[in-house]
Image 1: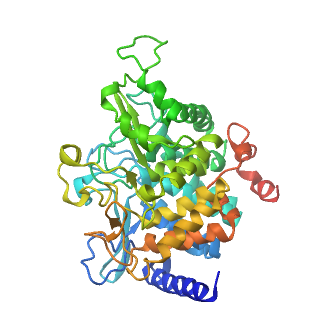
Image 2: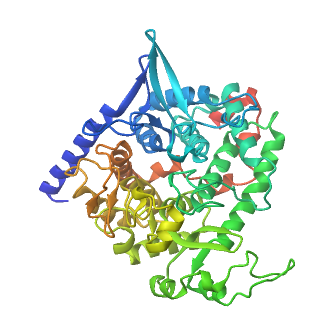
Image 3: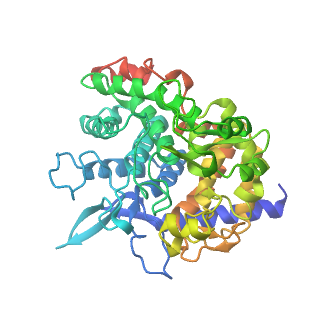
Length: 482
């Protein structure tokens, strides 16, 4: 790197860290998270709250920097907001949910935290991903600090147990995936992802692995057995039914419909006319592939969703061969997925009548904007972690260089519009915290690829051999020393 490039990079990091410091929220004198954005030019709305999914990149960055107190406080306070009692009122949050966000309120000079479980959200959608991200952050904290005793506290064991009970409950469903409504994750508006969207399945798999490491067997045997049974089924289901490459596309293209019985090849009754075969035939590189956005009855959503694919690579939900194919696809279709601002949340956009019907004419989700194929810099950290995991560092380096050209000058927008990501999002907030931390965290993964251990797993820890269940609560010291 030349001297002027080094000075520019240092300036970007200095300005980014200064903006990040302004975003830290304090509660009773303690830092408990980072607000979504610090944009003085726009109404705060709910951007002055700490969102669980938004804080993930901040948390990982703080852990790498050794600022573990912020993450610890965040985990402790959000756990207190988790409902612990069974609710008979259907309008109340279910037991085990982690809120979408929280804020500090002051009454009679006393501070308290107020949680939002979706009651105030657009369309009133309850977040499914919050409890999954929370588990991922808890596990990252334990990995960074080596403080297993923190997660082994009774209140944290109960919190993990309640989340797992919520995820593993018997359902009107016979798939190992999680059934969720539209808007239940980062895609927080109607975009046709109702059913079993990839983003939730990737987070679900990662959270199951995190819980498997953190749960003590004593008193949790049924849950541990449930996790051990679910993990291999979920992984096999996603790897087979969601995978799309040119060979798989050829197989699907020749599917027969209306097949009955256990020997049916076209198990989800996908009709050939429902898929854009000829567009995919042109777009899919011979060496590339990806996991579909959604699979269900007569449904194969062939859109590429970045978060779900990247987290599948990071968590080993995708096989090693599939992970390399995903990175090949990103590299070969750089202009489509990265463009002038990394990276597209999904591709391609819904347009025309499809946009109007699927999104309900949502003006924020117009084609190539917001969640309808807008560009989100926060995805940089997942791209960098995936690149480190697959030893494809150059992909992340090139994407970071693209982002650095504009982010500081554009004042850290939430998202970008347009097919190439050249336009600052029409309704994007400036000084968006996870835009800032997305870049800073991505650079940390390049500086030291070993940092991905915060969100990735040892292959040997998969399944019943997890060390977390070889000891009971009285053996924490043994595990710490081991």
